[in-house]
Image (cartoon, rainbow, N blue to C red; front, top):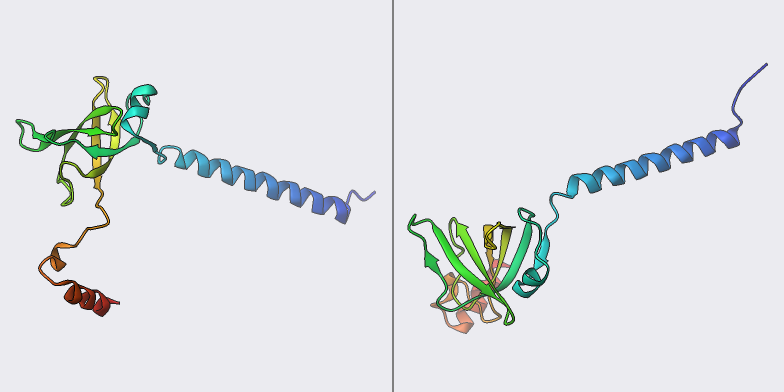
Length: 152
C-alpha cells in the first residue's frame, strides 16, 4: 500500500510552509526593529501625552532665545525647545552641530527623564532656505554658482 502524497496536496503543503515562513520573517523583522523606532514629538505634544520615561523619541522645535547655558562640567549644555504653545527643557553632552544657535530649528534624539527634562543623545540642527555653507560665504552669488556647477 503506497502512502504517496498527491501532487495537488504537495503544492498546498509547500504554499502553507512558504506563507508560514513569510509571516515568521515579517514578525522577526518587526521585533528586531521595534527598539530602533523613535516617535517624533513637539513640546506641546510631549506635555499633553508624554512618552514613558526612558523611551527613545525625537523632540523637534525652535531653540528659544537666551536659553542656551553651559553647565559647570563644561561639556553639558542646557537649552529650551519651544513650539509656540509649550516649552521643553533639554540637556545635551557632546559636540554641538555648527548650525545649532538660538532661534534655529533643532531635532533632539533622546529620552525624557523622571524630572521632565529631555536628555538628548544626538542633536540635528536645521537651517533655513537662506543657508550658505561656510566655504561659499565669502564668494559672490556668481562665484558660488560656478563653484557648485564645478562639483556636479
